[in-house]
Length: 346
Ligand SMILES: *Cc1c(COP(=O)(O)O)cnc(C)c1O
Image (cartoon, rainbow, N blue to C red; front, top):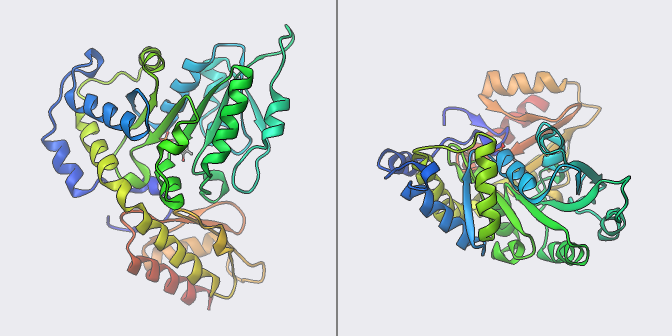
């Protein structure tokens, strides 16, 4: 990449191996189920997560939307965290396109809802009320510093879902960051939910695409929902070829991004005027703030970083910033950001 871009892991370019695989991918019409590369990706993703079947979709948002519209009907209600990506950052698709009422609950600093609050949020059968139908979870939790949530939370969710006949879906856009940080097999989390969507882009560097996994019947229905939403693609093997590399190779190297995030957090903590709690950094996201005593305005800091050093950071309103590490960020790039901030704030 030609800039040092810490704004997000969504900015990642495909790797040279991906471009090569895309150029030579075997393709067919995937709406006919005839693209061998898409089929291989769907099987690979399903096996990786211990599910029966997979469905290649255009984005994480589409994967979550297809899952919700397949699990729930108009007039149903979905329980989810108030800072969940699905609730905050997906244009209200549950309500807009699904007629599904979101029921947001508070979350703790790890992004977990309280299990007792979930239990009390489940509604009885009353014609005044929407029908409780779905529990939506997220791991890692993007709204909570990329926190990695342990499997026992999902076991608790599963128990509630079983008690009340609800379905459950995991927004696993960065699930492999979470399981890398926890050093666990993704199946140990996926086993507790009916469906999971994972992003092939972001830290895994594919140019586009997500995979939704679940049991065979669910994925059969989800294929119809994908078509309904205009998400049926034709020679999508070009994209799936990069997705296969994402799942086969790129999941193996996420620990390096987490080490870089740790190094960045430790370095930031040494810079006067920067407020950060390095212990919050569990995966590839580093949130920090400028102290009120720092004379430079946040937007001026951003401008100076870019104009003078060619470095981009994410701005989170007020004095708050986010830096995300990924494949295209090397240890010396972390050093470059730290020394730029030292110079600017000196
Ligand atoms: C990025 C992201 C999504 C959506 O992915 P897009 O591909 O950008 O639509 C969903 N959930 C979480 C937690 C994400 O970080």
